[in-house]
Length: 169
Image (cartoon, rainbow, N blue to C red):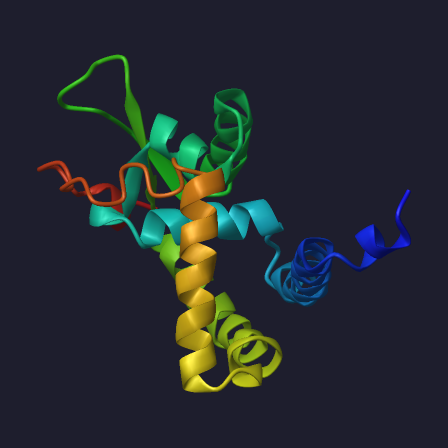
């Protein structure tokens, strides 16, 4: 094998991405642990909080998180028991249901986010000049959309009329 293949910039690009992700993930995991959340629970809360009506259909949540539908069901079951989420019937499709953030879930996010944003600023966005950050975000979106086309599933759908789920809990 040609030794130069190991110096291929494509290998370097993926290696740097993996190393950066691993380093950030370790910092985030320690911070989530301080708030009694797992990384996947934080991701679920953020995905729901950033969606119309603070909710998503379970199938869309699975698509956005790359979890299987049964994996999402297990996470939502656990988070519902902890009072962070609730389920709602889908008014337009009886076979579907929504996962929605409760007041307790939003409160937990409010507690986590200041530290989370400090980590992001210190170890990611603060390392880049504004133009480099814009270019990085553009590139990451293009790669994300290519490799994970369902990453924004349901995030632009209007919220169903009954948006009382966030008030529960």
